[in-house]
Amino acid sequence: MESRETKVGNVIIGGCNPIVVQTMCNTHTSDVEASVEQCVRLYEAGAQLIRLTVPSLGQVESLRKIKEELRSKGIDTPLVADVHFSSEIAIAVAEVVEKVRINPGNFHKDHQKAREQFARLVEVCKTNGTAIRIGLNHGSLGERITNLYGNTPLAMKEAVMEWLDMCVENDFYNVVVSLKASNTFVMVEAYRLLANEMQKKGVVFPLHLGVTEAGNGDAGRIKSAVGISALLSEGIGDTIRVSLTEDPANEIPVAQYLSDRYGRRLHSTMTSLVLEGKKAVATYNSPSRERLLLDFSCDFGKRLLDKELDEVEIRGTYIDETGSEVVLDGTPFADYLVDELMQAARRRFYRPEYIACPGCGRTMYNLEKTFEEVKKRTSHLKGMVIAVMGCVVNGPGEMADADWGYVGEGNGKVSIYRQKTPVLRHIPEDEAIDKLLELIEAQ
Image 1 (cartoon, rainbow, N blue to C red):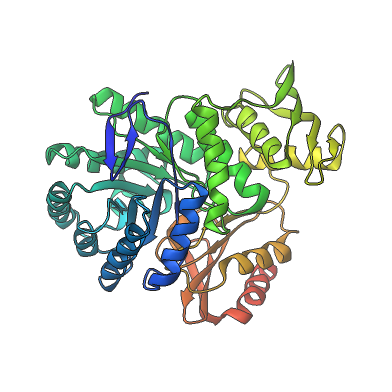
Image 2 (cartoon, helix red, strand yellow):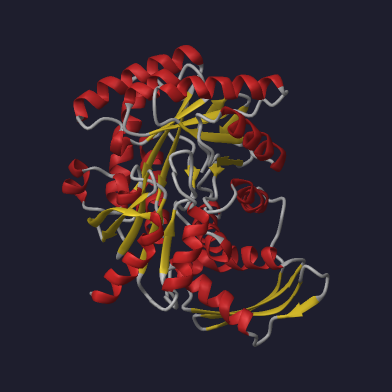
């Protein structure tokens, strides 16, 4: 599906251009020095766009300084401002950066006022050559849309189309759009619906793909690869971000792999495939452990999501970190890869399902360390969905599918949620995991 081209600084997204790789800083934007340092690392790692959060008007000036320092170092990577809950911040920062990400679900609480503010934002963007990402997340749909369509992929598509129609009404086409979810099935279906609707209307905006709150480690990589590859394999998607609860530099190699693979610059290391009814037996000869799990996820994620297959088996070899060849056939690691892939495709759950944001400048606690501790202490809760979220901006919404949630409040305090309802607030961080486990065990 060929989309329109959108210009973001010196980067063109869409059309026949290569898939663009991007990431997001997890520094506090007000800390100009730390943010510049991280941006330099991300640039050196290969990021083609870098996003930073802008939670207050005061940080608009911080972002301006970050941009000036990067440009003085010869780094011209376009910067994206991530804005939630304040249309005034979006309007102000549009004069500073190359792209502004807004979330339709929280741009303004009044729908008519949101339309008026969006028209103002568009005028500023036209004047400054700034692009806009209409970035809707599954958990922040808003009451008006969910009352009409439920909390569904259809609702996500309908919500975004309202805003894309406003772009057309305002004669503004320098736009990218995203429909992210932590649930791979919901994410893939929402993007498919949107791609089909844009084609019907004759205006196909470029799509930013991502599985939001994917987590970390193997699970985060497999889950991201499953969702993103399912769409890229259908020609849907122009720019990607792999959201990992890790150092953001770790996201770049995974995203670059996906860009290379679906840009036809890289091929799977699968050497043979045997189909036995709705089961596939795949053999690999991979140069590394990570390459193996990414190839496996892309080769079979879509087929599992779409229920073309019910089971997979992996065989063959890969090269470990010491340079030694490792045989997969019948090993616990082979079983583990299959289990992780089945869980990522939402076909079979063998452990808890975790929803964890990657962290950003709004996160006020050690998210990576806390997430690892939560996983360690809840690993026995097979099938339960547990969320660990950095802040209250997306946290309560994005963990809408979770049974339990741990959400940072800032100032060393945490809220514990049961589904969408906060059951404990202002819990000191050093007590919060214990409290979470007490509540789970008492149910």
